[in-house]
Image (tube, rainbow over the protein chains, first blue to last red):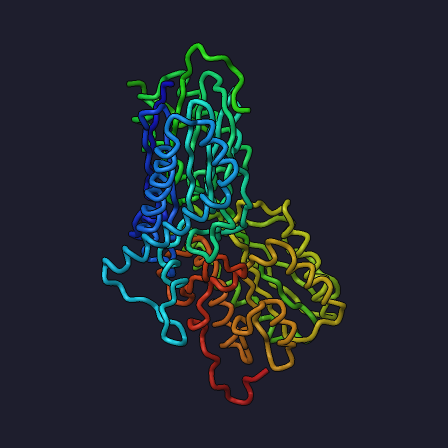
Length: 280
Length: 243
């Protein structure tokens, strides 16, 4: 199966004005078994989360590590991997993501010799520690036969078939500037997952975008139309020009939109002679 | 390599609704309402400057006055660059409950967008509600945008019902005391700078006044975005200046 996978994180217009760093991270992996793993994360960037850029970097690495390990464990057994993810995605796997993220946050904090906040009885306040690295996480694995998506917090994972974009996961929307986060106690309970068999229409586009992208459009309809338009331009011009223009397009989106950091990851399957019909 | 136009349609900044809710009852007549008029008028240039510093948030202003019933001064929210203050008069009872009812109607989705920034609501009052306000206030605070709003109250004079104002803000520290004209001007000015804080909760605003204290993750009360340590302290008053 042929994939074109690329993406970019850009610093938001508001952050450029104020001299703060981009809090988004992203990562992509093409595996030898014909599957692709994508992850994007948006650090909170608030005063209570001064290391959230590190937190978002840890989050995308954790997703890749967890999914990569699972794929290795179930190598040659995609149906068993599908069953496992369907059964354990929102429980065991989600707990694993949260636990591993928090373990790595503590390790990084210690390695940088940063102080721990102490509670009223002098114990380490791990909640306060995790908040300093707070982040969302969007993850997607696409194989030749199924997809697995995972999300905590804002942002969007979309698929475009037949010119219409739709969200792969529909999560609880919190109004305003707040979001669910990996830093919270029992964060795994707020992680949503989807495991679905797929047959690919020609061509198929998956996007992972942090919330700065959707928030730069006036409505959900406008946002989904924009994602659909990315597929159109991939079909018309191919992935090369889209990849080279993407930084400029995301820059313009942030400048004239909501001003936030924006990450867009794209997995584009131009398709071959496979039967049509899109995602089941 | 072809030069390609950005995919997708029109981009949009996020709306930020700022609403003055002004008690225009009879007890506000005279110096109180004239000070309110003057103070709010004077905040407009600074609010416009702050909005220019953040072009990614679209600041929209509205005023809701209440005495006998309640009325919106403008039919729709007005962009800050077009906003002009029309002096308010004072007469009649204090139908604060009606004001809450009308506010709630505007904070539902729609007409509010779910992509908006948390609205800022500033309630100014010098007395006690004369209508049945409780049910309407409860309804307002149950709405998603009612809960998420940054809610500030300015208690004008010693006869104001601070208990009601605290119910509105959900935080006693955000009931600002103004017992003389100078204090009222300061409190109105402080409240107006909340509009510059909401769009960028990760960033400390450049101007003096409001500073950010970021809420814990998952905090639901928008008012906790404000740092109450930066509220101006009430002046020591000479007796003739106290309302």
